[in-house]
Length: 54
Length: 250
Image (tube, rainbow over all chains, first blue to last red; front, side, top):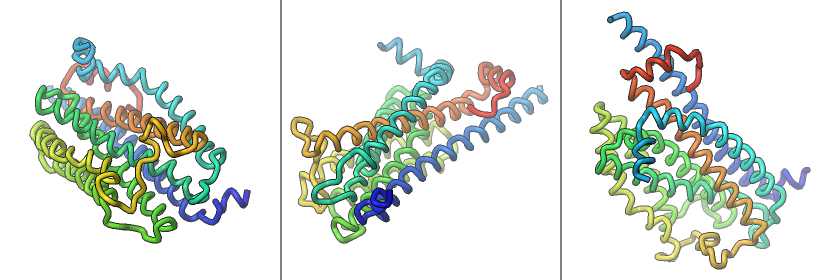
């Protein structure tokens, strides 16, 4: 296990590369989901307001 | 064929078609990413020269390939915006630009991290690295232009023109290692007749690339579907969907 984690002495380089790549991919996913939920809330308010105006 | 594209370029049809597609794509993506990570970090042997540091290839190369592929997809959308004025293409252009920028950033950062132990430097102004950095600026330019112009259609047309001007950078990024004498290594995988990478190392690389492609498709669909609802907010089908659905997610 220790040998696997040490990556032949390149642990800092290998693990940081994977962490950064998957980290920004996860961040983009979270941002996309939050933006989608925000759009949905805005649409609900927009439709209610429009119906009330009618 | 034309009928198929015409049918699914309708925002409503695309919205419901992509909803059915999502569970399959997510399942395949999760399976592939687990398999690829196992292959990349455990089953692939260490490189005889670079040791275990070569394992960075499994995140660096798929990110770099995706940075080019997403830009080409943006180019196709840009042509559809300028020539046929397809609404779905306008939405696609603005939805996928941040994903392309993310992959480009990942390729640059992981390349820099890989460069330090192998070349002894974090950065070198050689043709491959510089042209990839230019690609990141092109993505940021397209995103900035889309956000700077209030009128959605004018913004999409302006961003499409910038995108098509920038497409000249794609062959420069790809062939830079052949056209110039660069610090970056030459092609290893794209020589399909005789790739200079062992099959045990190659398979996880290819599966990881497919996983990254699926990630791109999944995130694109999330973003496009969300934008479709806002774009078509005055239509009856969106009203019906929003009022009848208690879902929190799109």
